[in-house]
Length: 134
Image 1 (tube, helix red, strand yellow):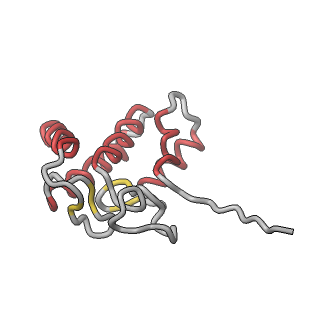
Image 2 (tube, helix red, strand yellow; image 1 turned 90 degrees about the horizontal axis):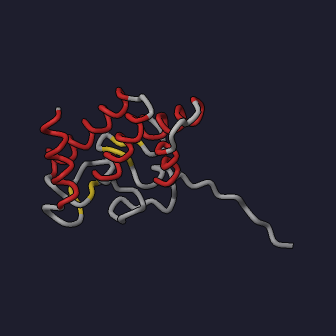
């Protein structure tokens, strides 16, 4: 007999439901908590993988770092759901990451250290947009 275990992984796709129009209050609360104070929250944006996951690697693309474009997209989705306060906070975190480390491809979720490509166009475009608006 083989034993099977269910492994729960909190990954960035878990919050893609925020893009769904008419999301119910419990689901919206779960997304909001996940990105603001929960497993995907970082001082520099939205983590790509749950901070407690043993597979997390601070420098591995989709296993923990923060991406400006993902953080911005989550903020946009939450704002579309009427969550302006948390959307503004996520944008502030994204701006903090960029102001501290430059227009990098992605950022260390714990330190905000710039990682990957320098002068990354997605990051630059989003930073310029948000800096102009705020």
